[in-house]
Image (cartoon, rainbow over all chains, first blue to last red):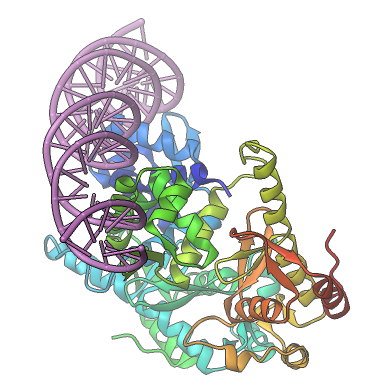
Length: 231
Length: 231
DNA sequence: CCCACGGTTCGGCGGGCGCCGAAGTGTCCC
DNA sequence: GGGACACTTCGGCGCCCGCCGAACCGTGGG
């Protein structure tokens, strides 16, 4: 086992600017270099250099379009690693006080419902995980698995896991939610659930961040299908 | 989500000395400060300072006995995080050339069979995972789960998963083996398998490292029970 | 009580790196 | 063709940190 690769990987995230960039990209979208510079609060030259290091280190991939440089996380594996590290690092109650009302509102919204790279997180994500366990769609007593009746139930609400599957990606994976400190569901099921919720109009983005709001029809659907009610 | 905690956590592992310490402790044992200093090749004062930072940062826990300071990884979650980062960071063929014959022999032994914190890794670990999948003891089509017939089979070879369970720990978890680049099994099942193999005398440590050798009776048992043969 | 061992504390040294401004390059629009 | 925009390159600055030696402290053995 090699020490240097681990130290280099960790070194990429040891700088607050680079860490903030990766956390921003956990929303699953591609951002331009300028947007990332503005978001993390550095000038363009700093952002350019730091982005190049993240690309060279394998955490991000880039794409040029005209004079714009688009950056995104290198893949689900990279997102899972950053998520796991962020969840491990976060301590309950350790977040700094909100800077202003806007910041506080944003945080409440994200804690309520948000995307976590390609699946649902926040109180909604955890509530959905609990509901699927309670309904026997997912079982965790002998591992973490989608049950046979669960597959049928999911097909009944428009989620076809076979069609959603990709390569060797796990069907379902537990992902520790750092605002709730309890797990929500990632993997093929997690992605399919998020896609179903967005396509079905149950959830809609709030502004440009990761927060999601439950639409009126979504509230009905979540209550009827999952027994989930969010305040 | 907070940037600073992630950067601080990553910063702990960004230094090669601290990274080497954590990797050494993946063998699951407690080491003294002096042993760790010697292993990573720094003087006692450097080791002392770096160990204190790792303890303060939450990655290690310490215990004093007389004039000895014992250090170990803070828990399975810490081990899983370090393992995942090391697996992510490792690239096939990226390990530096062996320094000498002893180093080469050690690496071959570790690639063949070794412990990975609290479960089996290396070609043996991967072969056992394959065998359990092939025999239907574990299924991964709908998630990763120990099957009902699998539980019975395991009980037949002396592995009682209910007794082995601890808290909310997952029954079975996939862990990417960085020498084989394929998964072996962690979680309650992984730990129980390693314990059965050690208690049954199938495997024995090689020296003081993580490498394990298959005993003659172990070779018979592994072949008879799992259909596994290691060269 | 003395000595050895294991580990700690602290100041000094040297190297690395993040940030920025200035100048430059490539793309796009008028 | 010219100007604006997005981004890149590079040198300078200041700060941080890993490592070590020396001195010290606590524990244990003779």
